[in-house]
Length: 286
Image (cartoon, rainbow, N blue to C red):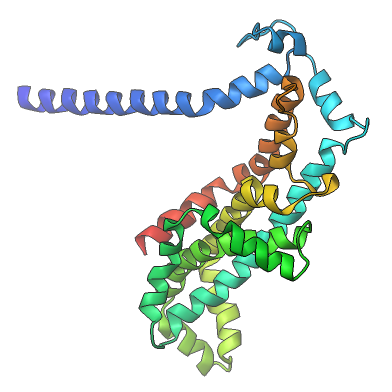
């Protein structure tokens, strides 16, 4: 009886320890977001003088109004949000489309160098993207794509597609070959079997790949800085950087913009969190 009691106490102690660790980690991760949001709701003078409070008695939306309605010689921040949204959505669609075709080919076809190519999908992420800035800029300049959103779409798709392909390959590997053969016996050709069997069974992975590609594009900064020169074509990360200079830092607008930068991703990610985590877990296990 005492042994059972000791085991129960030990298990409860371990459980309590992990719960405390989870709470601490969540606090460390979420507190910066809370601080940015709550600071953006306080007057600019309090931000400049360092008198921001974690639980302010008085809050204002002036920073958001100044940010979204600014017209004095600059493009309104809402325009930058639309730029980022358009680019990231197109990147999500293209990356997922390329990944579906590539992953299905790696999973269902036999060819020389197949396994080597599969391993290289993740190996490309070993190298920092800054190494390819000069050759990529040269290619885009040659095709007159500098200072266009198309250049960002192509670059961001290239950055996201390898991981999406690697992720989806595990899903297509798990699709029973017998199901596709049964579909062919019922009169489906290979394309119809792919559409009706492989794609529906891989839906969690496809959704996960799309969200990953969108987040990758939304937060990318280096190539946007290199490729975009026109003020009206900036994305959110580059627009936020413009509020910081050696002369002045517009803290109110910067904090409000940082809070708004997270909002579209949260609106898309939170309703789909369950499917996103399911896709990652199933992809890892398969």
